[in-house]
Length: 221
Image 1 (spheres, rainbow, N blue to C red):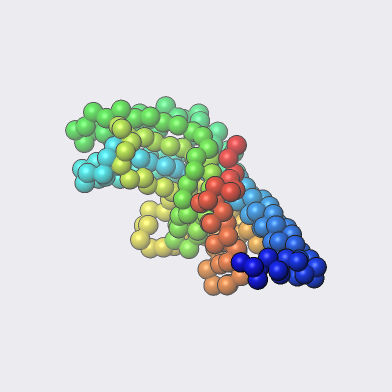
Image 2 (image 1 turned 90 degrees about the vertical axis):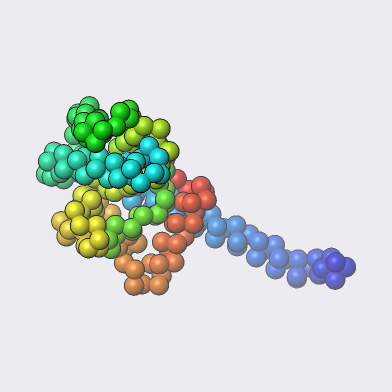
């Protein structure tokens, strides 16, 4: 301890420590500012779907997927020609009751009596991969469908651009969906969500992921 205290008595050492601390603060502020701007731009380019099951029982989880499938079928009918995120949100808002009715009808057809709560808002999401597209953790505009007590596992996808491709196991995102996302992002931002081969891009994505999960940055409105 005495040796450490003695170091602070040396003017040169003291100045180096102070400058190093200031550099750390400056670098941290720049990193957070960069991550905040990029996170906001990415969040502003997508509209997501979030379905929450009543519980984690196999039956409730299976029901969640059936509700999801019917919602996606309807979504693809009304949003197929959307060219902007706001257009997709406006259509979903206009047809919000229809989404709720589809979910309720599916639940009844499967022999359950759960209520359905439909919300359109800005919600927190973890990092999610959609084929070869990855979205960092953060706050995103979304249609949230809560089944029953909504205490089960979640299912996420992206309504715009349409990344809720039918064959999820294929890992292939339609090229037109990528083009829509690319048109709404800068070159670097699109690389962050689509390029997993560049080490510098991977580091920046991890930075977004870490700061998003820690709550230091959000795109919350």
